Length: 212
Length: 212
DNA sequence: CCTAATATGTGAATGAATGAACACACTTTG
DNA sequence: CAAAGTGTGTTCATTCATTCACATATTAGG
Image (cartoon, rainbow over all chains, first blue to last red; front, side, top):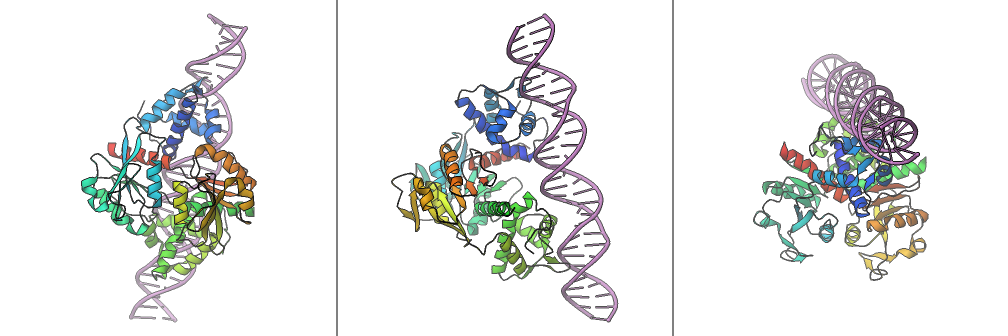
């Protein structure tokens, strides 16, 4: 049931993690079955959207019954490959980078920051929460084999060069907090987390709402 | 020229900050005019989309000429109300909260975290970078008049209660890093920043790309 | 001043995502 | 085992967003 029978839409893909998390939480609370409309209340997504999303991964539910929570955890877990650990490298141990290491996606044991890089001599060869920090210049030597995922928390000005070097070292998935868009290889997938933009557009919406 | 002649689409709203930032950067570099296709290269948004977005705020450009950078800075600045400072309160001074205070949107002088709250006695009545930290229990007394914006960086489990109290204290715009969705007043605008979901869906896309 | 070149703003076409509604399959109960 | 109830998966309609393509307005140059 792993394969998508039809092309999965971008919007659906961005909701998979929400579904997985909700299913996990229900399982932890001992809930064994759930209806789409109940799920809709919990995660604030319309039940029709939920059913459509689910159906794009196969027939997960049963008419007149609903969905088995265990099935949802299983299926979405497989989609997100939670069974095989995803080792992650962090670039840039400033305030944000350090906070990410401390956090380290603890709720998701499969997501694991295993090593960090920085260019500040004061930080190099230290560690945070057991995660070693190396010089970014040594990226190629220090990057563990089989790691293809990076989180980038460096100043915008360094971003382009950093990402180029990551690509050269074999990284193919990048989440970055610097909003400066960069050109990358077609095989590389980049997601930009732009907190300033998020806040500004939130404020725009909020201001509009007040005016109305 | 401030008012939108027609309803501005949600997708467009989320791009306003990108346009503003790009215009600012060009102005700082002394660039005085720009064409939509040049802008498209810079911010990686198709030129047709840019022109349509811009046109929803009035006729900012001139045929055969392009856009005046100064006009763009001016117009988008007004849309984002950069002339009137937006004071922000931060709830939750953990690793992430502290990093946000240190950062404090320095590139945008109108965005300003002015005070923080936590419930950890070890942090209360201390300060970071001059930003005082008070007890969250004292929110109502300590919240400066006229502040309607909050950034929430507390554990998911506390989120619901925290947001309810923020609403009671007059906050109407909230950006939060806990993904647990909460019910809120219709006058409140909430934006969820869900780093785990972003990473998971990024990885899903990246894995699909490798398979193809 | 007139012509050639240019680049916007928009109507029309396409594509993506959501929403409404229901036939049918499965469950449950008596 | 039959009948009543329930909730999925899907079809059709609609809204939202992007892309195309060009008439039109402006600039630039001789």
